[in-house]
Length: 492
Ligand SMILES: *Cc1c(COP(=O)(O)O)cnc(C)c1O
Image (cartoon, rainbow, N blue to C red; front, side):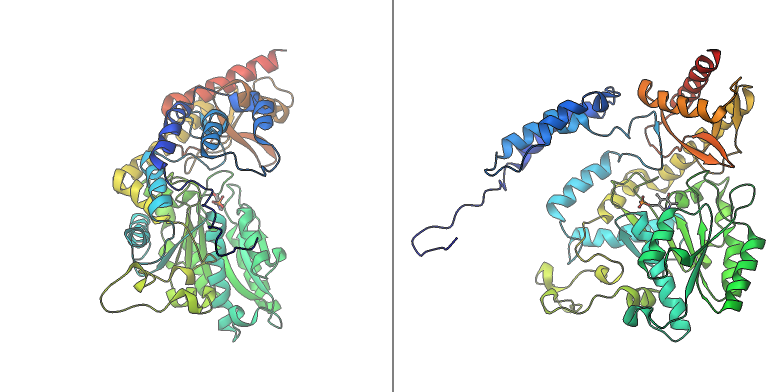
């Protein structure tokens, strides 16, 4: 449309005020949602909310009030109740109050993590606090990411840079064309995002050698030693050994110290995937399993898991900050005013902030995530987080004890962290099938939602306790429900 001198510019159609009113409209429904008493409601109403929401693109906007009405009456009540105390599925949960408030604050007042603002400072403060909490050396470079997938990608990207620089090749500058093939060594129980990271980094999914595990799902060290030696003979570049600090199937921790030794012997990089279990280090019963992780090149953790920061918050810590910057540096751009400002601060924009975050990962624009991590740690402290991790470890041990003590149940193994794999046996002739049916009925009929998994060729019920709202009665209720449904199914 052409603008002529005498036709005034149209007003902005989006409401930019009325924020308090908008939030107040939603608060009672959010509060009701957080009581989690509408179990199964979202699934039961699926046709209704689909019809209300899956509409054609409006040609004329319907206005803020209609948006708020739909959010309040249709969207929020039909959300995902993973904060419910009975939810122990996958490795995911809903944030607690302080970080939910912080994310709202950041959306309004800290819309970018850059420049010199209080939110920018909190990126750095939260990195420092996390490192201290987890026993990561204070001179490592931390960086927040969108989650564990990117956190592992960033760590392994730095590993790739280090490995190829050692053979006289700069992969960040030249790619991998003409370079010898590289290999990442990880256990067969490693998270799939590591394989995908290898694909993104040009090493290829087949560039990950999945080393078999021992009888407890930890990487088999003798097999890994052979694999490293074979790789060396074949002239492949050893890019990294990945230690899983908390596998997602069974929650075991690879022998980190021994892997650090091997990485040193083979002049390669140790990357620790602690997306789930990094915070497990806070539990004194298992803390020594993490000894040696300060000898790694990089560690990935996921504050949006056990710390219960709002989803979209992972973090990577890399020993060599310069290397990380060589890996992910952004080309200079005139409009970004990227040069670190010195002298007196006259405006927010005089300086990009305390750290060049855009040089430490794959995002340029990014939300302020540090504020959410800061909020949780400010609220509950290191001690509060330790209590949570120990309590969740207790819940897994409690489920294990019940599975051991009940003839109808089978325990896979004593839990290391907060995952406990168990299953119903009773008189079942096909336990895999019975437990799949139990899991399905738990989800549709009860408030208990554990995951399931297959380990050692058998199908297991797999609660993973990271949910701040889960208590002993919830863990007990879940075991009771498994037994009750199992009895019913096998009595037929
Ligand atoms: C969750 C998880 C990931 C992936 O993290 P996202 O935050 O889901 O992207 C990677 N590794 C482990 C061990 C995990 O638990």
